[in-house]
Length: 489
Ligand code: BG6
Image (cartoon, rainbow, N blue to C red; front, side, top):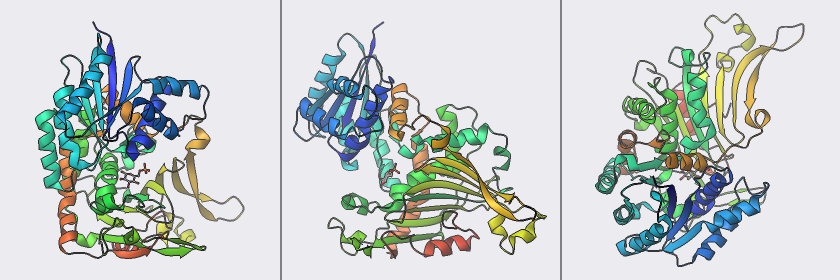
């Protein structure tokens, strides 16, 4: 009966994601007492440095939500003392063997559990899995590997990656992360639906007119142009983050809250989706723009982006789920960089009230009178429902008001970062919020033909100014499906 010990190895420890998200999330978990008693954190990357230098870097970037709290300095020091660094190449079995030796020293006399976080470019995924898993498999404890997207560029490359992974790891060991699934409001989606009588009965084509998944950022691809140009916004945001939310939104009631049951339902949604027609998609790309005496660069002004690149930084699409629940309901997605605001939300627009007694109060625009449920994922998390209400007074005037659940007004507890929840789940072996390989296959099966068509036909993106509301084509697309974007009305 050995005492368990956990070692967490962040492969790609000197990268941005590790510095900005992974180490701060690990520290937050430590601060909250969520990490096991015995644990060590190893950073692994090519950069030559020692333990102290890694600690220095981490301590500089621990600008997480914890850093102004009580005892933070003491806790940070304790945490940093458990952090170590090992420099090595990603394709070197010897370097991983040396890491393995260090891990074994820490694990001596204990039951070793190992978590590897691959925060590395996709071209070295397979090398690392090959070299690390050889060394990592321990006879008694568990070994799990968290993988960051992109999981390939299309069905073929993703399938190839899955096949390679499976030579070294079982599906149970692979935790494909989509950090949007770790966001508070996204997790809450199922709670809202399945534990409130007022929502689930309305959750179908009978009452819902359309659903919108909106992602916008108010900054461009600055500094990431090289990566981004190879992927584009559809692969970066739609095929994963937005599609995952759509699947959770639209799935049937799972048998239980077990990870397999939930993912079984999600995959059914993905497999029921109608192939995406090119005419139901518009793509855009931001161009340079001057505003208030400041000039903002266009996408192709980035020196790491090839001149004349057609890579979309914006896309909008109308998708359909051909099943009994959702037949004919447009699911609209919109994702873009360098727009006027940073926001992620789900908007559910309900149908008109049949024979509405108050229709004359709304003039000719009955769409303005329909209920809309909004889940604001970020920033400033909120759930609100737009309803029609009588304006107090002697006359009969109606207006649209919000039943508003604003998180910061309702809850004093801070909302954990998505990476905290997901890391904790991986440590606890909870797979619910990670992507199973069949989900991944279905997601790629849906988007690959569209991506190919866009590339083959060299579809030129519609240009939109940096900081604007995006290409006007998105309005026409929505209008074609009798939809108005909720965020713009
Ligand atoms: C990542 C994308 O997956 O998500 C980035 O690669 C994007 O392009 C990021 O900026 C957005 O995440 P968040 O949590 O900041 O909304």
